[in-house]
Length: 418
Image (cartoon, rainbow, N blue to C red; front, side, top):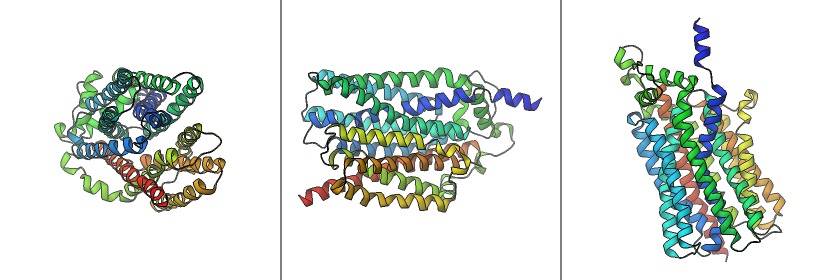
């Protein structure tokens, strides 16, 4: 009877994975959408290096917010945090759309500064959602966090697909780039609304989600109590209340959790240092002029995102999943050979070679990220897994911040050569 009860409790696994995938798409599609609109922004702001500037403005706010939230994660209501994050994504996406309509797509320093301020807000919002959802899914089934990461990667594919379609359809029309950009922004705004509905209405009602949240609450996690209340579960008491199991004093501190998994955290940090030192600024500004013309950076972005998404499913095949700490670090550091590969390919190679190198960058990024995220939380209690999810988000966003800063070296080198 106990087995039957547990099987009933674990119903809805597939639907939960689908919702996690949608939440992953919603957590990054506004930013990916705007990064794929580089051709439009370079037309409107030709002298401001918009892709590099937007990214470097966004990062400090994302990093500082993640640092604060990771420190106080055990005291924060996860449900309200995630709802607040997705609602902010919706509002900010709508504001970007309204700003473009209000200015009629004209450039100028005022519009550019306004976009920079919105990107700073996007950074705060991304930190709220990334750590909140990753922390929550870390104490659930590993397939959920894999689906969430795949959704993040898929957001890039969706954004690139939208941009390719709108660019092809509107390119020959008057003000075609702007019309395509507005349509992409409208679709991403609608997708944020879908994410809010999925998280608030459908996700809490799944039996498997109630099971994992109840389990985490019994292990002492107070962050899920509001989720359980929203799902109609009122009688779950934490271990601190019933006096059994692990108490908060027995949970490992953030420092101990970090030290126990330092190779994984450092590896995740280095993955994104390399990736963001190349994406998206290098692809838009330093790959030269080729037969594809203005389509070239968008094709490169699309290939990266497709391979990033495909590779995030490779670790589902157990024999292909890399879990060794040393093995992961060897593969992660070997990726830095891509820096000279990109330099010489941009300088001497044809566009086909650049597409191949970019595809390999995406392939390794998605695969290694999922390997790290699905290995680290295993063997810990619910509160500790939630903390680990937030620490992983902190390391990821720290890597992005450093990578974006390093990305400016491409521009400095190009100026020096000039």
